[in-house]
Amino acid sequence: MNILLVLSCFAGVAALDLPAMIKGKLWRELFIYSAIFLLVLALAVLVAQGVKVPSPIKAAQAFYRDVLHLSFKPS
Image (tube, rainbow, N blue to C red):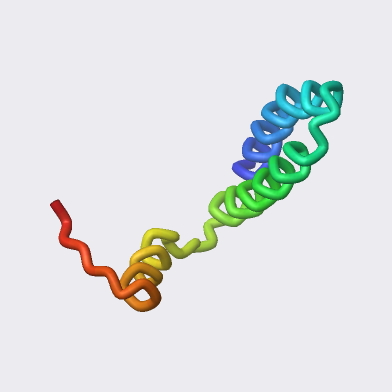
């Protein structure tokens, strides 16, 4: 039931956004929008199925700490 709700919400968002992009021939924007849209849709379906999705904040913190060698203190 949760997956059906997620899919219907995403279909509604796509129905609102995509026709204007196609009509305006915004092909680059449509490509980027579609890629991000499908990624977020896949994550939403996984969450709806009960799969534990790792936090992207942990990856960002590791990138700052290990790659950029930056340190930060929580305020």
